Image (cartoon, rainbow, N blue to C red; front, side, top):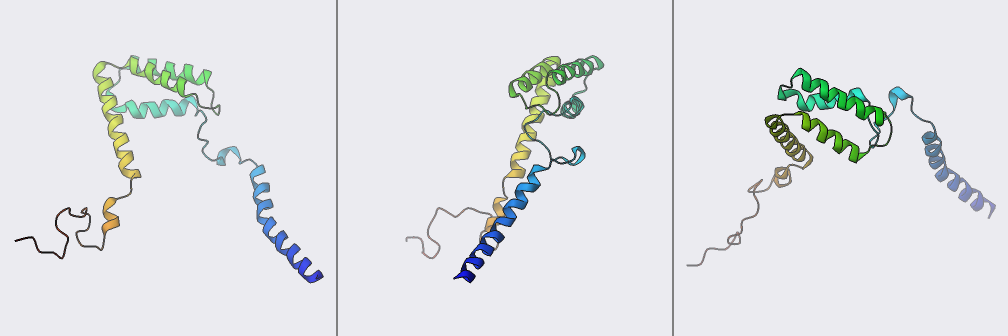
Length: 155
């Protein structure tokens, strides 16, 4: 009887060990240089500026436009410091203000580029439909809607 109790206790202790190790590991924060990306927090003003300049890079912005956009991003970063929770409303407002700096043609080019980028991201995220049909007859083609395969057409 004592052996069964000791065995059961040892078994329960062995099961509890990984849980306590995980709990201890999560208590210690990462060093700032190795911190995982924190989705849902505001990036630095410089990072925001880099992202916008990458998005607007092919629009041939004038110096005045670049300076105005930089000042809008600086204002945004002062009111939303790095690491604070994201504010979707403020981000939308920043986007609206930045688009307001662009000419009509630049706005159209920007919107087309964003649509193309979204479409590309959707294609990358969707699994390749042809892979599920590999090794089967008519690979990559949906099943036909005609006659069943082993029946002759009616005369």
